[in-house]
Image 1 (cartoon, helix red, strand yellow):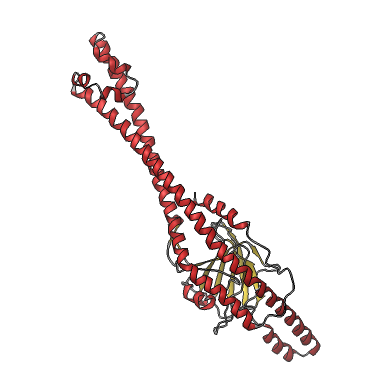
Image 2: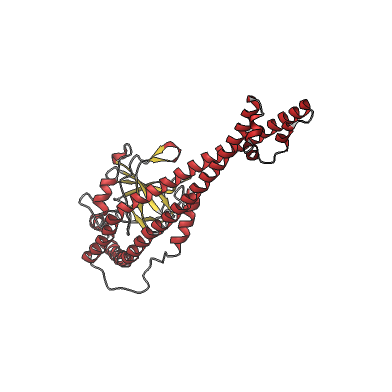
Length: 365
């Protein structure tokens, strides 16, 4: 049910996704203008964090409805089976009573089409033995309980439908707001990227002309500049666009799992960049994580990017990457169908997975 809902939601939000390449050339973007544009998407991220909590609660309610509906459907099947068995037993008893009594008035139990009709004949019930009355009462209970379960099932299905509509509306609103903020940011960001690419090309040409190893190494250091906001620790936000996230560390997930990362909600196709300079440690495709990348930073920290829609062109295992360099795009592969986001796992020093929420707050807000 949840995957079906998410597929429907994906259709709602996918129609609004626009190409990220600016249609017209812009004037050069300054670092201050880039920082200002990024601050706008950070403000959206902070504002939407509470909405994400509500969204997760709504998804949880969907799962609860599914479980309750399944349980009632099973009970209803059990009641209907018991009712068929009890009716057959009652008819067998009535037939035996008819034969033993030589066609007495007790044969009317065999001819009744609806057992509730028998319940209305108090005089007839009074004439039955205790065991015979128990049969009739059991039939009445099973019939009434089946009707009660059918009514409860109908109510739950209606409530689930209402909750589904609320979930779809809330999700569409969140992604629409992210998409608007992201489109505005991408105009500035991509112009900055274009400038940075041109600058790096000029610097590379200068290094080649210098033809000296020492000067080439010094120039290479300046070439490792960031395309995004750089923190004092030499890292940058892995999502180069509007995003929002909350602390969901160790929250329960399907199959008895726990959440070991932070989910950064963003529009489909939003660029993803290396959080710090290092190299591509591994690239993967998994039924849960979808398309994934492990980046090992120069610090020894490992960053796991999951659910990507695509890898950046030319990306391969072992490739050196600069901080802020494009490595992929936000998607919903794996078990994230219909909910585009980056699942980020973080292993400081290559050790155990650690909650990355506070780090992302520092880098992305």
